[in-house]
Image 1: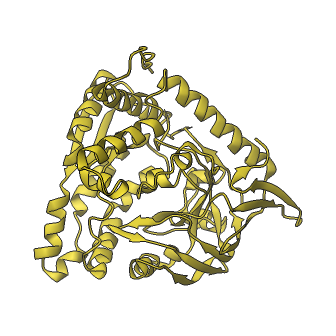
Image 2: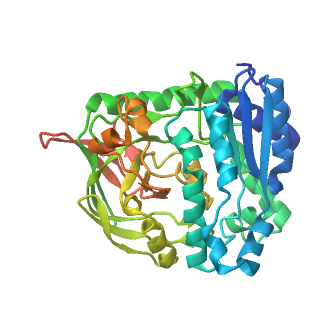
Length: 421
């Protein structure tokens, strides 16, 4: 793996930062290997970054880069003109092709730059049906990712629509510039040596995960405004954070940025109430002030001050949509939280606060889970679903305790910060 050169004393230009982001994504985040193929997904809005990522992929020895570009205005035309029955269709052939590429050893690089409010004014029923059809079609490819069979990475690119949502009331060019600067900072691109910064950060996340794995907690207890939640942890669970070796032997850091350590909760052992601390952007709709109640691991009551119909359709995707597939710990003082920016983008906002995810669990968070059959994973408490949706429940007012199987408790976080660093 080659290194990114130390920054010159002069201020980096935008083009230099963009090139750094592409290089760090390919070489540090993705860990692309010589001779490996890469599948790159993005929207047309991020073409300058797409081209830089492609260049660095070939410079790193990629055998072939296949780029799949979406166009969001074209996606909206479906809702304006398509027949009603078409919303139950998806491009199965495309997603099966992606799955086959991953089975053959291709890496997956994604550039997130979608407009979080793209579908906010569209029929929630049609949006839900289209998403369900896409999720079913994409599942074979997604399984290669959730089982960590391949090395993969996600970064983001600033676009006008997204930037105006994050920074309203200022000229669009200024909003885009501010969003790009926030992305560069969150991804450590503007540090003197981004590679060294990522290695140090990665080591720190591993240290926290190792601490949690040594404690072997049976459950986590959350207390805060509107929250009194007990999350049981899956049998033989393990905590992960930062980078890991995929089953193809490649070390990668899947998400850039990342500030979390995470594991698999037991699908039947979550009890109590929890309130979201940040809005959730889902299927183009902002869902605000989520409040849910769990019994025996299942959501039995769900409300939101905005976007409640979308929330209800999301959790009704399948039986697993009402159960937890991930629990993650993030200090309130994380750089993304400290920025004070609400990104309306889970890739960033989940790294500003502790969060949970409804839906599919990661088999990699179960000891030897990658070698288990679905029924074996289910027996240990891993959830199965077509969805995996993260939403934030952490803040500077949340306390978290670790619960041992014998009932003893141990403080983990107070007012959103680790008790023991």
